Image (cartoon, rainbow, N blue to C red):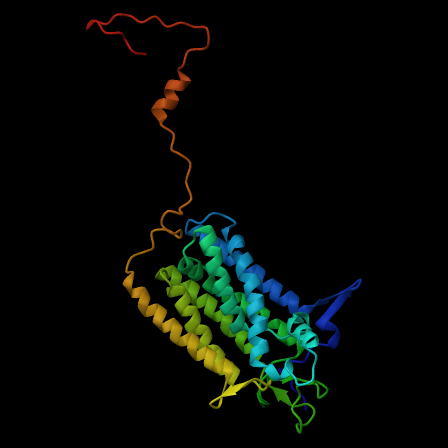
Length: 323
């Protein structure tokens, strides 16, 4: 059957390439590209608000490092049967847990770990946590959307079977291909849904921020609500195995928690009706160059060259005349 709009799975060769003894995974490149875009957008927005250039890198170091660790740990503990098995030596289990290059990262874990990293980075640099989070919100959505392309190249985390013309073609040889389905079955391209949702959310936040500046955590709140709503839907139609609590996948519950936290943050931001005075915490503002007193500068310009003498002339009042 001809399906002109269906999305073909990429060839297996597209999952990565080798340089000497090293294997470069396309999934990792997508994540790296997303991080770069997120850093650039956030850095620009922070500079527009008065932060020093480069401060986003100082904070980003902690955020990325702990975000990666959080992403891995969240995935491991929400898929325990994949890593903790009876009879497996502890050293082998530990190696499997840290083998992040074999895949297995969770965005909600990255958000938790990244938030801790941002808090640490903000304490070091003096930036307000909520100021950084508000500046980060659209860039973070763009980063997540770009990172979802990695799921396409790995042909993973797709949704339930669908008759929609833009369904994803998955070869029956794929390890996650459901048993009992006919070869040629199409599946919901959940990676594409989330990519489009994330990019749309970034645009919405940028437009709202231009009209009504999002400060005191409002940008972060909108991010949590937007991402939580979309992820709760896309997660519900995915078929990859995961832990289920009270009939819902664990990430659906995490999405609900994100929405609730976003609503609470948005309401709490109402305590600050004005604009924030600075992206820096009180006492941590970056010192600006001392203003030059033009009168002193002019006096220095008129200063006599070395060796010259100035004779004070008596004034009519008997006091010495001043130059």
